[in-house]
Length: 406
Image (cartoon, rainbow, N blue to C red):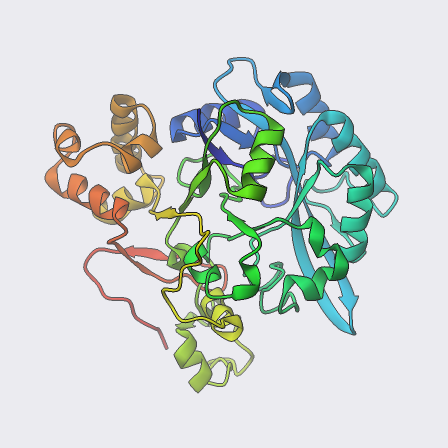
């Protein structure tokens, strides 16, 4: 049984998230994308939790389904921790996977003893990662905790502003309960492979989507091959890597924090140029926001191209709407892009099927040769992307070369 899973996104109850992120829309657009397992997100929020309980029926052992039974759901959430450790400010986001509604409610009840959970789908707390892991494992060992988007500067456990240089530094002896890390949009497994201390943690990839649009939902995902879809089987596949076939990644340059820069000053730099500037913005003379590639270089103890023996493969590609937007030179949400996207999805069943499987000859029967050719180049990882920086997404380059901007 092939499972394509996006296990990290947000509901309408999270900040900066579309009000249309409802169960109905998540279910509908996940099918269009080609996913068949979704993380519910935000189960700690009381209204969303109530909505989930009222609308999801158990499919099989910790996996749930909505009315039309298109998509399966797994109970997931995210919290933000902001605290001091060793006299230094720490900022870490965690994914939480829960085996059932009863355990999910117990997690939330414990969080309520530490602060409010009703103001945001991703609530913020001031306790340490060590305290968090210890408390959650006391609730149930079936819960999985995963550091989210680990390299991003502001809330990644290894990010420039997060403060830690290893997971062991963050968790101490509680690191034994951490089995996986999330790559984040601005990094991919190949980048993490350069850091040997991460070998023991399985890289997973998710969209962290704040909207239901198909160029956001499922833009990163995990592909499993399992006999049956149960919560336990998904968790075991992540822990053991057995049945975990590959991850789907956007090019890391596409991420909003891949390179260094200042969006307000409209400047961005490669790590080499940032070093020459000593990390200072030439416009405002303040420290630059240091991106993921720079941070990887700081922590790496292996050369570019190293691949661990037990590495899970990955496939790197842009969402279909991003490709069409680049070809047409129009906005990603324009009618022209959407009409072409809908035509391909209607003919071939889902966006991921178009991106992963449909042959060039099949594509040419429906779209022009240029579009078909670029879809195949995207599948083969042959497209160039101008790196994103300081909260700005990267941009597909069809003719121009990658550059820095001063």
